[in-house]
Length: 245
Image 1 (cartoon, rainbow, N blue to C red):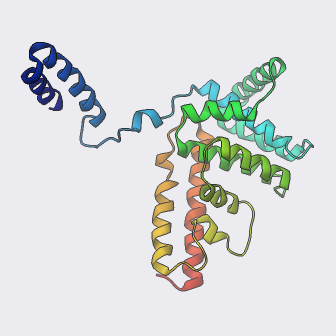
Image 2 (cartoon, rainbow, N blue to C red):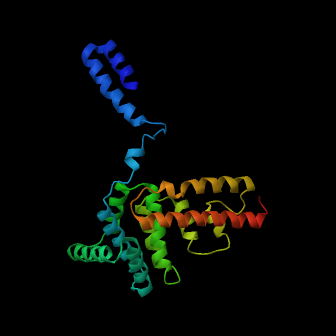
Image 3 (cartoon, rainbow, N blue to C red):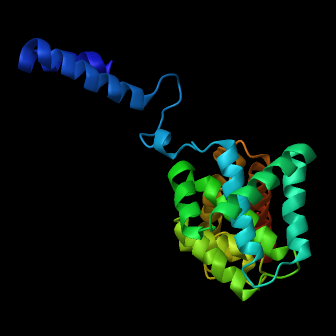
């Protein structure tokens, strides 16, 4: 509809050339609005994941290796965590092919945390990067604890991923327990009112809903479901603590 209005205005102002220009501009605006019953955000196309599965797998594996080596030692349980993830997601044959490709790649170039993160930022949605960060925390915690060196490296990755501080603290609270963990997960203070708690829960449940994680990677989608459950558990813990219904 917009394209015809724009074409009419263009014709009125500049005759035929204006009508053509108006039609082109109007078509662009119509496309931004999308078709069908669901309204689309102007930013939807530029935030949708556009990285190929192969690039995604190799870059994720590179980040895994960075976290495994973050504290200066290679822990077998962390290696097993990563290997099990790829085996369960892709099957033995494809997982082994991914590992072989990765080994060939790192022979020819040094792994750069900033370069990898910049690549992913340009090609993935924010929600996907949150799930990647969640997965990397899982690797760090798989040996029973998250070391200071690992936290520092994870914080560095979060910075390159352009993950805000509240989201980082929320994810970290799912792996490093403290007395106010539930509040950290919901990104609120312990002094928050009951209404603020409910509002925070609704906001976090929406942010971390698995449907918002647009990716072909099964394990990242599973991670979204786990994080969504953590948000629910945090809210239920506060409900129990405060006697909320």
